[in-house]
Length: 417
Image (spheres, one colour):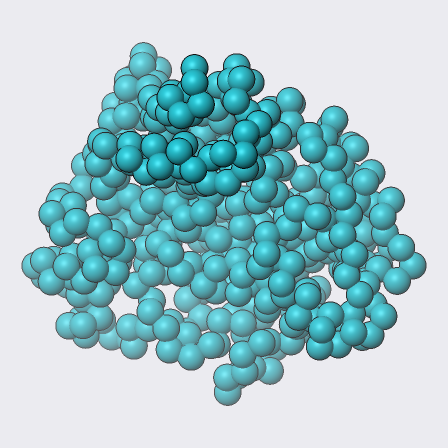
């Protein structure tokens, strides 16, 4: 594919992703020397932030769990594709919505540990969860079991199913914080009843950041003939896993949170044996072509392929950094946040004491209710964090320890040190 002057495409990407034009047009830098990582990890990751991301020094960003930050290679990939597609430089239609994109799906399947026919591109985890909920055959009186900590989108798809078809929903209260993974598995599996047909839960809970014992729950569900659905919105890029090892029937994913993808990129996993059982929510001309496997759920009409070029660039960026290094770094920052929260007199830690039960999401609870002044200070100091009485804090490799320190210093300023 021929690459011309990237300025027009960079301008388009800048508008699309909301980044400064000068940042979008800047050349890409090589990763820092690995010797620096061994010698001074904080300096290494600071260099990654400065050279690989567009974040200004004045921004403290502690809300990666809502929407992640696209690094420079991702912005460039989107920009280049927008330009090339506008110039019709390729020999295929520059879109997605009917194309199978088998090579990209194979690369994702290899990385996330599943078979290529089992994975499809969607726009986000909400769309994937709705595809799953709408596509599973259930009748009035059938029960869907969930936790009481599901994301509204992970709950809403089943609520609509209940309103439309008379399906029953039941929530299981999870302990906060839990003692261990075994307790969580026991709470979930012991709640299964004679009418339970589906068990749907988040692999990493959006509220507390808790990593659920997915395989244990899914194995038990399978032994009872129950369908297992995992809302994996926070999983791809935050922790390492192989999808096939989880033994779930379905999974939704949002790589725009932790895997550096642009907004508008999602993943749908359908276990191979279920590919012919799930009804599509959007019917194109090939809605019933079973030979397409999971790609059948990608036949949704013409869409913007540039964002998926960005998603693949994000995956390759993650692989270039070294996934285990990334997981270790963001977990280190989470432990640092947890320690700062434990030392604060203004909040109670809601995350588990056992750090094996969380990745990079840490949940706290304010002891005070008069938070307006604190929120105003956060805005004044350009600290981007979740607000409210029970906020979660989520760091990525671009987060600096000084950003976390600043958050708690601001809290002390607002409430008194």
